[in-house]
Length: 291
Ligand SMILES: NC(=O)c1ccc[n+]([C@@H]2O[C@H](COP(=O)([O-])OP(=O)(O)OC[C@H]3O[C@@H](n4cnc5c(N)ncnc54)[C@H](OP(=O)(O)O)[C@@H]3O)[C@@H](O)[C@H]2O)c1
Image (cartoon, rainbow, N blue to C red; front, side):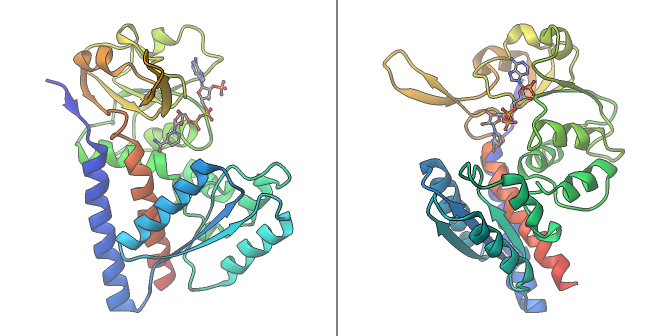
């Protein structure tokens, strides 16, 4: 019997827990958790993401501030805004929506964010903390994957996890997390990418597959063994015969799910976890500031 890992329900559970934490922090310590979001330009998807993040904050009783700039804003204005939030003790989390317009150096902006307010976990300081197993901020999508494995009581210790993808926001951090010497880690991790020869020989050995590729239905039934756990991070658009399109993952769900012990659907798997973990990271930042 294949278990469907329900990210939507798990994310809703986490949001309820965050709402309780936000209220407690306010009532006991007088601290109002606060996320500041910066959006530059007119990319429609980015506008939707930022609006959804602001709405998610409202729903858990968290304060949010959204600053929007036109695409031609100077880099200095963006950097000054980040510096102002760094210095503002009422702001606990800072998120700069990516991508930024070409004339703004993304790396410089990310480096300017105070690592203790970097709730996206993209600052090299937090990447380094993750690497050495120290407390920091873990990028939201990998943090969400670990949370799904934990809440569905899927053991990772001693298992062989194959991660497909080596991006800084998903592939590398989830590989690091799974390899950490702790209960939700302790796996033997193989990281695959475009340089990997014969992907299927690796994925067929996997007890756990994390697909973070961006190629629709790359992983087929032939890529997996019976009883595998599949976490599909991919968010791809598939064009249907009638010309419409629908969201699909990196895994061919219909073909792979009969062989899987557990699998995340797309949509409704990893996707909803990302904003839930952003809220969780912001609450963590607010709690740390209260201590
Ligand atoms: N659910 C969420 O909240 C969420 C969050 C983030 C991302 N995503 C989705 O997850 C997917 C990956 O995102 P990303 O930002 O990590 O993407 P990315 O930066 O484009 O990285 C993709 C990785 O996949 C590897 N790759 C590409 N084609 C491959 C192939 N045929 N065989 C093996 N490896 C291959 C690439 O290898 P090279 O390094 O060699 O190029 C790269 O490491 C996308 O669909 C994205 O939309 C979802």
